[in-house]
Length: 134
Image (cartoon, rainbow, N blue to C red; front, side, top):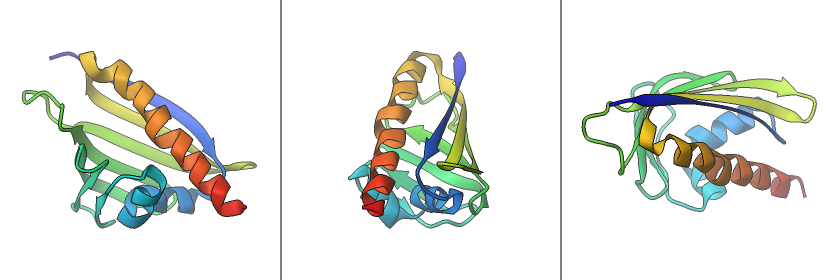
């Protein structure tokens, strides 16, 4: 099965630590996505997001610096291992620069997930932190 990588960077109006926490803290993750998330921020811990559509395992956690996960969805082909998802966080004059690299994405799903990151993560994260500043 052929796979592809997705690489995206966005500036989110929050600190690197706040964005990291929103991604790994189930309560905060649920708050910005509007869908249930589970899990704890611990190496080896399993998590779910988007009401169980996404599932994975935390591989490496460096608060506010880096997050590496195993990641797949309920639509993932059975013969394809989970993708590797890596977020890096850096201070930016307008908040936090978040760079996301997802490798091992099934080729036939890559375009949809590329847009999905924008629609279901970058836009809601930005709106979540903008609302907190009001």
